[in-house]
Image (tube, rainbow, N blue to C red; front, side):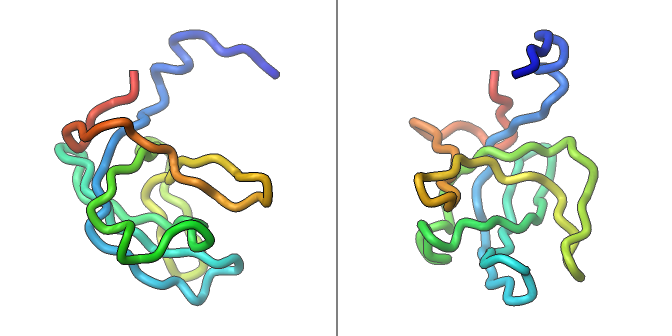
Amino acid sequence: MEEISWNDFEKVELRAGTILEVFDFPEARKPAYKVRVDFGEFGIRMSSAQITKHYTREELVGRQIVGVINFPKKQIGKFMSEFLVTGFADENGDIVLTALAGNVPNGSKLI
């Protein structure tokens, strides 16, 4: 594992946001949703997330997540992803979202 400096870590914009809407993404190569997330002062952004194994669309709406908002946009098929949804792989390789222990203002930075 390569060590990074504190300055490197500070460059990563890990921000809290609230999921506003969730859409099916049948064009994705692996099962995924499209999520629309409110990052407060950083705006509303869209991304895809391969989280269909652990979450239904309905239970995701209103949930706070952690996203990296300063990566370049990424083309995924005909869809443009505007941030990276963070999570961890379970024992089967399926993604479990990074969880917050309580609610924080949208756009709050992980410190």
